[in-house]
Amino acid sequence: MITTATIPNVLTIAGSDSGGGAGIQADLKTFSALGVFGASAITALTAQNTHGVTAVHAPPAEFITAQLDAVFGDLRIDAVKLGMLANADIVRAVAAALRRYRPAHIVLDTVMISKSGHALLLPDAISALRDELLPLATLITPNLPEAAALLGEAEAADEDGMQRQAEALRALGTLAVLLKGGHLSGDESPDWLFDESGRQRITGRRIATRHTHGTGCTLSAAIAALLPRAGSLVEAVTEAKAYLSGALENADRLSVGSGIGPVHH
Ligand code: PLP
Image (cartoon, rainbow, N blue to C red; front, top):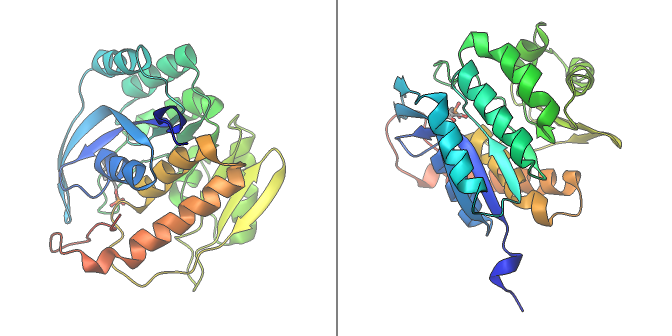
């Protein structure tokens, strides 16, 4: 018998995308599609469409704390996904709340810059993200530019470089790293997963669509949704990648804006 008690509650702490393709909106669609209940603490509002971000409004950090106290004070939270955090004050407020409430799974999508080139995390907040949040995360999901920024190194140019950087990121205190190789050229989109049991290459076929807005948000949200019921991290990541592939395969069925459109959940 399925009871409501078996349905995980998953919280996204991220930014809003008014165009509906990324951020909180992508996260909640992913949660629904994967059968979990979604809660949301909004770190920033973006005025955004498929052509890009035109304005960002971040509330005072105390307002993020108020949202987190309200959610954790009432809801059982089985997993957390972290997305756009906007600035160092918000990073520190989120880290303080996570230290207080200690959710079992924390998936940190190290969001820094949108595909359209807009900063979603101020550059001076990268060190706060590294020092305060990496040690709390059970998984981080950087792409190649984000990994390079966290390490203060050049971007990995091949899979050997990716593995070296994934190892170096784990040495900063996070339990596991999914380093996404989508920025490498080739027919495959190889990701490397490093955790305490070793390393694993997880490949995905490159899907031919220009509509890729919100892919990183969707993948990290799917992992957070799947982790509470998965047998292992690698199982959750593999299933989440399959979910994202399906959303990319369906993206061309949407007619959302005239720029880089979203994936279809
Ligand atoms: N807008 C918000 C609020 C986001 O959180 C993100 C990614 O995390 C983006 C935009 C970027 O989306 P993309 O780079 O996939 O276009």
